[in-house]
Length: 271
Image (cartoon, rainbow, N blue to C red; front, side, top):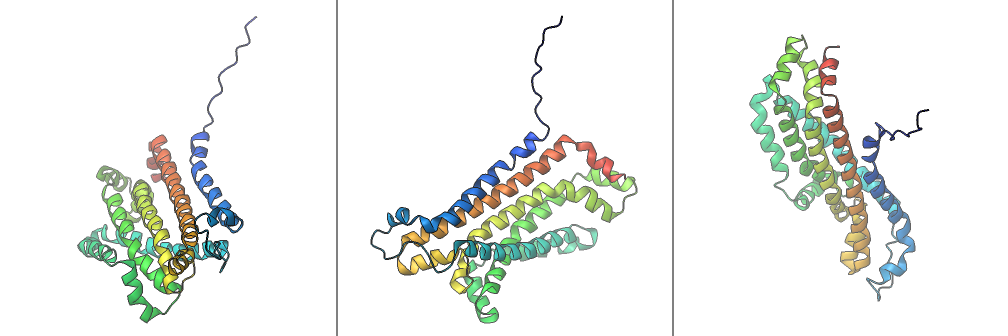
């Protein structure tokens, strides 16, 4: 009679992928706890401002400020991603290569102006509110996306594109089925940098009437209330860490997919 020997449990094929989302969930949970819990933490923030009449920012609910912050950053990100990736694709095609230096210079120009200067120039034209800060975020966040899109597409192995052409694929099919999938990790890294930076930069919108998580910071600076500043800064930092770790998980998942099944892309291209 054969002895009953237990076989070691095989690791689940989904476990590496599932572990990728642990960090974003952790930071997101901490953000939710702080958004809902700060109004009840007066004793903690009283330690920073023991003589202040009020230590919890109460002009707006923190979840409202978070939603407005995400809206401004999200709108700017959608426009910037569309323009940046579109421009990067256009100037890496044969008909648009002559405009590559111009696009690179225009994208770099956006980061030569400080966001405060962009706001000062935009307010007389666009008025107070969310439009000036969206404009500033678009200009400030364009360079990483354009730069990484160019790098990602230019680094695609020429042999892969030649093989796709030999299979009878059109230039458009080669772009969508070969070049963009291979360049996706690099492009996503540029989007990650752009969005993460803009989460912090968006706080300046509070200076021009765009209500967001920058409101407690600006109010704290004006009133000399460090507790307000800490509340706004803490929520912005947790939001940035949540979004950054989410992009990190997406990048890791794409790399796992490309490294674990290198032949899938070629087989998919022939369909």
